[in-house]
Image (cartoon, rainbow, N blue to C red):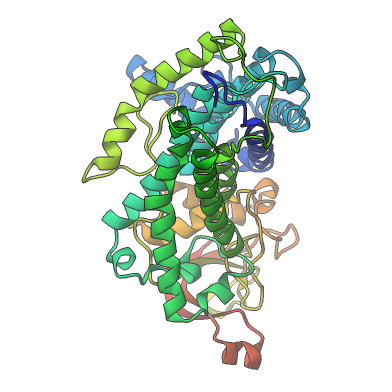
Length: 488
């Protein structure tokens, strides 16, 4: 680092800008494919109903986060136009085209992605209530101030990326230490690979690892989240300690974070959470002589145009103010997880899996064409990602986000069936085509079932011996008839 310019962070900026833009592409594609059936005009939780409720009074309108649909009437067509526009802008950033211009060009592109996706998240209700939604928004906002290819990134923008990674990792580590006992007695991963929301292709193999390896996994997780993030800030010592050592320490810390995230990618399906962390961790790569960007600074501004220096310093000052709340939250006994302290979702608090469930309970929806439900032959509705057929190996979907599958995992953790789930059953009785597209397949080929019901099962991975004998990935035992047969 020289002055205000992070001259050795050119490679970091390339990965940050293109990687964050690629994740925005995934997010907009996911929304384009799923939002109309989940939240559209005829969705399970119609967004127009939320907007109408918010517009009915001034106090309710203040509760609604910023969205373009506050003034612009929501329609499914306008939602699709917004998604396609977001995909186009993100694709241009992935290709590096806006970065060839002055720094305000990529800035406007990223701010457009930020505002466009915030407009969706703000009306997404429970289907967009995930921590990685606000993570992507904050990452997109910070990426707007990384500059263009003809000059070095500013120190302020790089340091703010470190601060984001620190809150993300250290916050998750503290949530675990303060959460369930299983994280403190090192048994959490004895259950987690089997009970996580959406297992991946290698989750079963990870679950079958010996107990001592699961304990090492937990220890490694604590080290990566509670110790390593502090060393991301080591390059700041370069102002007082000349030489490459501070930068190398920062790069090693980033590498350790990336390595642990790749293990999570290999053993689970956490949408773009892990991939966003990997991309953001690249902000730690600033080794002198590797990936230098722009000319070496020869002025007091560090080679940055004065107006751009003023912009990035203003953003840093803004973050200095709004970071008080998440910093205090990190030290709070009752730490908030995945919380935003302002309407614009900047400087958020992050964290995940403070407790680990020990049993995997799945709600299985079944339908039949028979008239008599007591003597009927029932057929299971198979979802795209969540466990269902016992021989089906879990697939890799991340960074794509299967929102309905994730919400199905949360259902058994609640005390009652949510309203959207009841609407889902009604839509299945009607053989609603958009709803059926959210599933793996329609078991009745467009015909309306006469009855539907919901049965709860406990799922467990098979042991090696059970797999050799049956070829099954899962074994399950029936628990309850949760919802008795319903007809239209």
